[in-house]
Length: 251
Image (tube, rainbow, N blue to C red; front, side, top):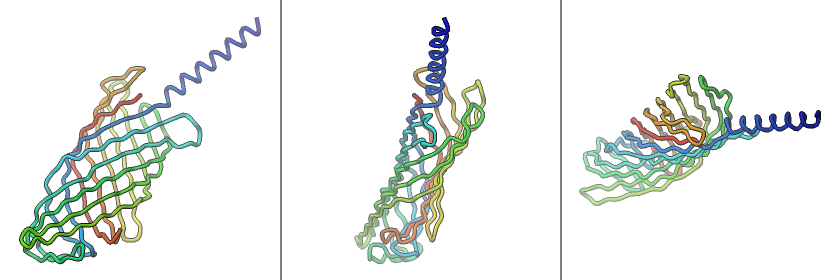
């Protein structure tokens, strides 16, 4: 009899532990469409030009894996496009790729830029009311810049890339039993003459909550600033910001 009770107790304990693990472990997959307004410019010296850019819809995709293993950080990978182009009548001269572009000339510019974030973080709080994550972000930036003087046909281009270590945090506040929540998430770094930041604030609504899957829509604002000095001989001071809408799946 005692042996049977012991086996039953162990079985209940095992089931309880498994249920708890299912509750706190999961995979998050999301996608966002981001209406991006781009300002600023670039050069091959600290005297960067200010360009006009068209509004463009960029995209972001991410996957995060959270688990119950102690001391082992959770992992999130986020890939974002930051592409844009435009035409500018220059207010002042600047140099790029060894070419001089003079004031009052009309230049076409193009930015092909992506950022990939590898984020390792810990959940310091995790409940229906408050969730707070803290960690580090290794942001890999890969970019190509192009300038074309429409009158003289002078052209220039430059490629740059690098990994930037950043601090990461996310705070989410929930309204229990409604599916509504709000969050602020961001990464930041400032050292020497470089400054990079990437943050977003949003309202989210979970419209499907089941044992198999949760589905959440997001609407918010995102801002990315890139202020770099002499990264692969590129100087840039640009800001990308605008509203976004997204969908997240939680398995």
